[in-house]
Structures are given as structure tokens and as C-alpha cells.
Length: 395
Ligand SMILES: [Zn+2]
Image (cartoon, rainbow, N blue to C red):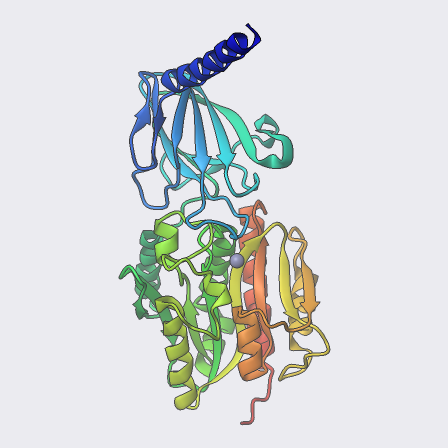
């Protein structure tokens, strides 16, 4: 009798499970997921929706899965579009399979203007393995993303505008593994002394891209300072080294499953090999890279630099730059996190070891105000130009 009861309860449990599956349809990534009220799609560049489970007419669970199995950096990128059939209040439950809630969702109707949702309206689960929020939708489709979508087409547009402006030429450094163009802006290539800046090795690091554009625009501006700088220095800017990762909505890697900012030195990937070839070419031509910056995002505004055990040529320049900038910046608190140069094969370490110059990872907080980020980047660019112009680079 006891055994029979046990069997019955097992059967009841199985029936419950089966019932649960039937009542909550699941759709794999890339497959349309929706109800008569609203659909959740991932059919655009930069999208990442994952498996979509319909929990109710306007209630969905999305499994936000990284591009490669762990270990992978905890930057759970998501991006999807909600297309309502009617005005509705939609509830979204994000489940991070290999990460923790990090990004405040941003919404946009036109992919130009973005608005973070009210942080108070987000409920995170125990240990932040999930987050849920509700959105009031009218009949317009809306994009919901971890950060603003800044795609290869935006970089292309930026390049076109730069060329029209007339102070910089945009060309290609080469092509990514998936044959996407990697843009390169090269100003005054005959000059020996060079400033090299790089961006977007890590796809979700959009706040760093806001800084990159403002910084680069300041270098390419028609101000007296920038014009003088461009007469005496060569500038090489590579705004997006990982276009494939950006298009695929990756958390971290390129399609080869590699963190590009751990591949400076090994240079095993198509994108980093382009860097290898560029540096080789510059060295062969007698070009001198004098300063190097790599734009990223993390949880706060910080510059990762070398500590005093690792002297640079010229000495103390990084500190001078950040201190002079700080005097002019009001609404952008940041740290100079000077550390020992480690074995990690990131760009900052590699460039320091190869050239002995000041190098930094320029990290912008994920949710730092975008306007403050841009205003600070203008000051950082101006102060760097002043400082570089003031150096006596004899040989
Ligand atoms: Zn990064």
C-alpha cells in the first residue's frame, strides 16, 4: 500500500511537470516568441534574447546565456524587441544562466534615443541570478537592451561624418573573422610621434564607446589646440576591434571564443593579428608610439595604469595627465588605479612592456551619466594633447 502511494505521488509529480511544460511554451533563441498581445524578437544586430518562455499573455522569461560556456566575464548582455499588438503592461523575467544582474535595462523606440528604466522598478532575485521588471507599452515596438545599441553601422556613420568634417580620413585596419571591416582613422601618417587609441574589444562596453567618440572627436576638432596637435603628432584610432562580437550580442568574446583583451602577445585571433601587424609596420617605419589608451567599461570610472615600480617614458606623465584633467572635471568622479604590470595579456600591459610608454585602460562606469562621460572625455583629450605637445621627444 505504501509503495503504491509512493508510485502515485511520483506519477502525480511527473504529470505536474509535463503540465507545466504544456502550459508554458518555450522558443529557442532566434525563433519568434509571442502571444496575441506581444512578441519578443531577436532578429536584429546586437540582439541576445535566448530561450523565451511564455508565462502568460504578456509575461515572458528570457534565458540570457553567454556565447561560450564559463569561465566568461560577468557581463550579461541582453537585447530584444517587444512588438505589442495592443497597449499592454508587459512583464519580463531575465534569468542569467552564467552571470549576475548588472545592467539597468535601457529602452528605445527609434534606437537613437535611449532611456534607462527606473531602477526602483527592477526586482532582482536571490544572488542576483535573475531580474524582473514591467513595462507599459503603447502600440509601438520598443527595444529593450542592456546598454544603448552602438553597432558597426554607427561607427561607419561616424567615419563618414569625420571625413565630411575634413580633419581625418577613415580607412580599414583589416577584417574581422566574420569579414566585418575594422575601422582605422589615421591622421598625419608621416609624423613620427604617435598617439594610439583603441576601443570596443568587449562588445557590451558601450559606456566606454561614449567616451571614445567624445575623446576622438576632440582630437579631430577644428580647435587651435587640436590643429596644433595634429600638425605635430600622428593619431591612430581603432574604434571597434570586435565588430563580430558586437553584432552577435556577445558578453565578451569574438567568434573564436577568445577575450581579445587577453590576446595581446599571443595574437591568435584575426582581430588581434591586425594589431600585431600594425605595430610591426609602425616599428619598421620608425614610428614612435608615445601614449596608448584602450576604452572599456566596468562598474565605476577608473583608469588602470602602472604603479611607480614600473617607470614610463616620460616618467610621471600618466599622473600629470589625470591630475590636470581632474582639476577641470566636476561631475565625473574617477580613480587612478595604478597597479603592478602583470602577466595578463591585455593591451595596457602589452603596450607598456613593448614600448615602456604610459598606457591605460580607460574604464567608464556602466551606468555613468552619458553626458558627464562625454564632457569628461573632452577634457581628458584636451589635457593629453597639451601634455604631449609639451614633451621634448628628441629621438
Ligand atoms: Zn573591457
